[in-house]
Image 1 (tube, rainbow, N blue to C red):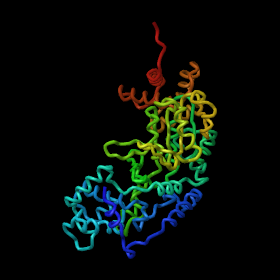
Image 2: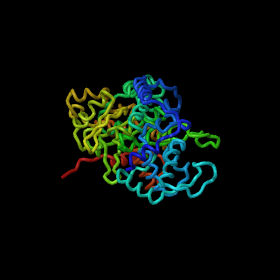
Image 3: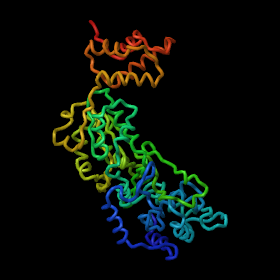
Image 4: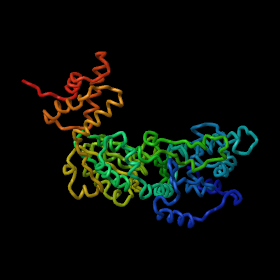
Length: 473
C-alpha cells in the first residue's frame, strides 16, 4: 500500500486544474436524486437511455479515494507494461486531466519514468515503471489484483440505478402484442401479463409443462429496446465488486462513438452502455449464489445474479427444483421484493446495502401450494396460470409452424390428426406438441428422402416417436 504522505502529496491539484465541489453539496445532490421519481431525469425514445452518467471533470467527482486511483495506475502499468499517458487514462476510463497530477508526482518519486514523447504534453509521453514503482505495484497487488477500469462508488451506482428505473406507464398494449407476435396468445393472457410487466414487481407463471412458460418469459426481452448503463465494478469502501459480466450484459456502441468528429467521451467510461439485462437460472441455483462471491486468488468479489440483473429481468426457471427450497429463496428476498433494497455480505462479516431493481419472474410446473404457504406466496405480487391450449389454439400453432418451415400439408390433415391422437385418446393439448411432432416429421422426411410434404402416415409415425407407449409384459 502507498504511504499516507504519498497519497496526500499526489492528490494535491492546483486550483487552476480542477474545481473543488464541497462534500456537503455532493451529498445533497445524491439525496435529491434518490428522492426523484423514476423516469423524470430525461426523456428517452427508442434505444436512448433515460439517464447518461456524466463525465467526471475532477478526481473528487469520481467519488473514489485518491489512493485507490494511485493503486490502479501502478497495477495497470505493472500488468500492461509501457503505456502512453492517454492509453493509461483510457484503460482507467478517466480523463487524463484527472490523473495528470498523480502522474507528475509518480515521476518525482521515481515510481515511473518517461521513455519518449510525441511532444504534445504528458498524454503523449510513453511511461514505464521503475524498479521502485514495480515494488509499489506488487504491494498494491497483495491487497487485490483488480486492474480494470476505475470502479464506481456504491453511492453513485445506487443513484444511477434509481434513475434508470422504468417510468410508470412505459408499457403499452401495442408493444406487448408486438413482443408476442410470434406466439399464439389470447387477449386474456395478454391482459394478465401486461400489468405485471408494466409494474416491474415480482411475477409467478405456473402451469403444466410444455405450455411455453419459459418462452413466454423470454419473449419479454423484445418489449423494451431501451439501454441502461452498467458499471464494470463497484468500490465499496476499498473492496471491489465486479458487476459487468459479458455473459449477461450486451454492450451497444453508439454511432457517434465511431465518428472521427467525436471530441471526447459522451458519458462516464467507467460504465458500459448495454441492453437491459435478461438473466435466467434454473435448477443449478443455490442460495449462496444470491450473495457476493469472493475470489480468494484475485481478492475481489463477483456480484450475485440479482445485482447483475438490476434495471432488467431475472427469470428463475423451474422454480421449486433449485438446490435450495422455495421457502429459502423467498425468505432471502422478502425484504428486497418489498423495499427494493438488498443486503449483501462480505467474507469479513460486513454488509452493504444495494438497490434491488430487477423484475423477478418465477416459472414453475409445480402446484403453487407445494412451493410455500399463503404468507410466502403473498410476497410475489402477480400470479398467472398459463392454461393448456384448446383445439383451435393448437391448430393455429400447428399451422404457423408449417408456414415457418414452408411445409405443405393436405386440407383436413390437422383436423384428422387432432381427432385421432387427442380427442379419441383424451390426450391433453400442450403448446410444445406441434413443434415437437412436426420436427420429427421433418427428420423423417430428410432421412427417407421423401417429398417435403406432410401425410397422415408420416404424422402418425412422427407422433409415435414423440410419446411413450404402454409397455407389455
